[in-house]
Image: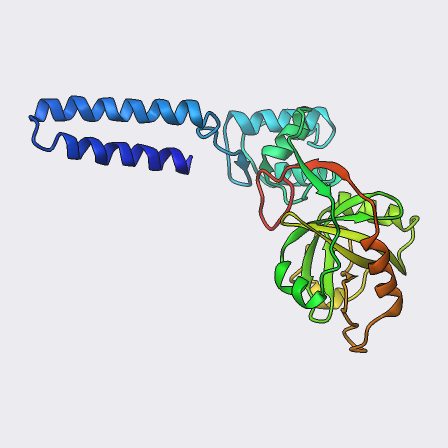
Amino acid sequence: MVIGVVILIILCIAAIREIKDASDERHMITTMLVFIAGALIIFFLFPNAAKAEMRLKNGASGKQVREIQELLQEQGYYPESSKITGRFGDTTEDAVGLFQLDSGLNSDGIVGDITYKVLTGQPIPQVEEIFTDPQMTSWWDVRNEIPINADFAILDCRSGRVFHARRWSGGNHLDAEPLAVLDRDIMLEIYGGEWSWDRRPVLVRYDGKTYAASMNGMPHGSEMNDNEGIWNNDFDGMFCIHFKGSKGHESNKRDAKHQACVEEAAKCVADITIGRPEPINRVGGFYR
């Protein structure tokens, strides 16, 4: 959309320069033609530009809200005792939040494009993650390449399972959280249904680069991130991801088991392409 607007502006400027000495009538006609040409360019080159992202929340009203209430009621989330009003209030917000939670989405009570597609049974757009050419990158470089609040994909080398996470903090190594309930569930399955300090070789995919790494599977530090982390991912705290040369926060020493897993991850043959709902409406990395 932005590119289309820029094209239209450029065309307008060029036209104005060409007709600056023309009569008012010719000026008007030419300007109208320029705008029509620009609109056609935007329409054909950017067909989705005019499609506004859905974002309905508490306080909204109208036909779309009524439709959402009806869909929620059909699926057992909107109380039968509550009237279909077309007004997005607390009851609708609670119903949307519960539906999102059960669907592995961000449970914030806001209806975005992804929530609407899941609610109506439409196919969800996919984004691909390809884990190839893992690098034994030093943690002291990784810490600058994967910034705080960055979202990334993690491939567990031994099981082949993939989930998504977000960097919360970390000075000596990376502290992360599962991005959503769905990711938390996959991570728990990787650990056999029980959280553990066991180290596992993983590949971290961020911004087109694959890093050899090692993670543990024990939520900890909940007292540190209660007010700053992802509050609705059903994960009480954070987990650790180590890279080449990283250290423990308290010991300030390298963990031999983590480093061994990093080396194992570097040998991981993982030409794997995975799909994940694309975060069309994204706030803080959540899926709506």
